[in-house]
Image (cartoon, rainbow over all chains, first blue to last red; front, top):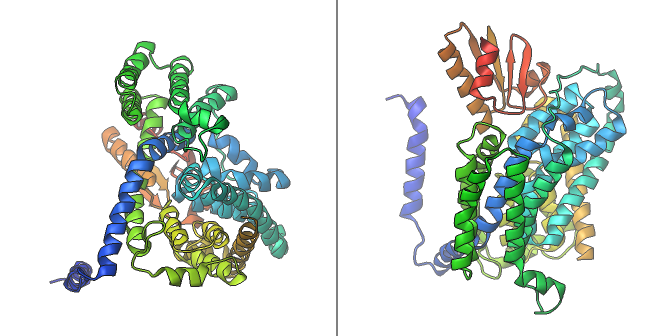
Length: 432
Length: 76
């Protein structure tokens, strides 16, 4: 037998067997943790998949197809205006980094062939935090103020980190020959305002379909809440018309695709999810077989769904087992969490950002994990620290960064990230 | 012909490599397809965003998975 090749499966089998052998069924804490995990998964499936994640996948797919990456990248090239480059680098993650695996190549490209160390590190820091899927999921599950703070904190501090990195290593930066990377040519398919309205319609659907019930049954928020499905339908109709007029989908096909959703909405008006699902299905059937850009849109969206949903399912299960639902308790006792990262002290903020910097979070799994931690007594400040330091850095990606820019710069960068994340957590925690 | 597919190894990069491989076979042209996953080498090639396809030193596409038609047009 070839042990060099076979030791891995054997190790897996043995460790899974040992884990099953000692499976602590009957232990009340363990049983409870399993139930918590199942409840949490159920809650996600009921509340977040159809109305939040699926529209978010379509939006992310649309960004990948319809937003010209080239028009953004030209501001990060070697000849770009340096001040502008920082600004663009700090926000461009929202359109460039919809897939987490694009961040590192872009980072090394900007560093080596483009605008240099400062904008490259700014991009590296803010990119994972401000991609649309991350913002939508953070705001939906952890609350709008944390979602907002995450985006703003990432943008502001990325510029500061970029400038500091440039300042620390300014001598080396000057010696570097400015090689020009090949920039893809911007392709202009349609005027910007048409794209803006198209994205507006999709964001409208996402926001109003998820409109939460306000605390008091009066006022403008409640009026919106009671009419949220009407508003969502209007946005959906608008999207249909946009697709007919500007995206060259045959008119009769769009109408046929939308028909089941309309019929279901009238017959089962008490179950808006049915009509919503029919609408999503109609759109998918309509655009998926196409060869043009709308077909591409579907393929990108489906790619995100295929990549992210399994990760998220396991992330939610693991977070549920370890930490339980908000208010519940999993395998890890609540007091440990509140002792380590409760309140808003410097130490708990530092602990959160330090742990976040080294820990690896698969795309978006930081959200359920953080939800569990907050439910077990983590403070809002440390939560933000972890959100800022977590997805930007992990041990594996530090090794890659090191291979691109060397040990010294990596150490400085990691320290800056930990310090900045701690600071933002402190500030945020003292406000909220 | 020397074809380089750049990408760190995400799903899109694998798909790009697969499309290129298939088209090379279909067109029956003499070509070596090489996968470049080292970040420094990718940057050296002048590629900013992945997946990217470089044919004989010329960058053909950056930041997206090319369609089969596009690849076929490049290698013919």
